[in-house]
Image 1 (tube, helix red, strand yellow):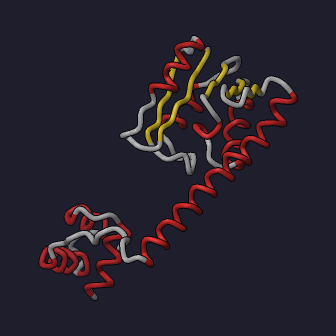
Image 2 (cartoon, rainbow, N blue to C red; image 1 turned 90 degrees about the vertical axis):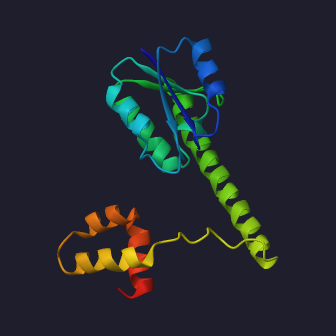
Length: 186
């Protein structure tokens, strides 16, 4: 079976270009993630890797769509090959069914990782300059009802509810919850 994997970094980005490529290539099944490629913790990627079987050909528009670092790329392709399937990247004209394709996989994977590092570096430089000019203050602090925080934390400390239940009642993620517990000295 011809299987396609597409990824865009945010829900607002458009995957139409990748989907059009898959249509042109006669791809039969498409998996699409709408999240960062910084790691392999992506639901559609996991589902695709669980689905594929011997003889399948996995196609991506470019290597950067499936992985943003060499280690993840090689691990994903090793998983694909371990199931008897093959990996093809159209942009890089990479086909792991050939020895040259297998070699170039590592080279292009390293380039994708380098590109990500450049992007992060430029982003950090831009933030530093904005901070110098007083234009970047960081993410605004989330407003929390202090009375509710104190009340729910007291219930948690008294053993009437778990930390998880407390976070849920306050609609807070763990890192925010524990940081606020420290700030409020609860």
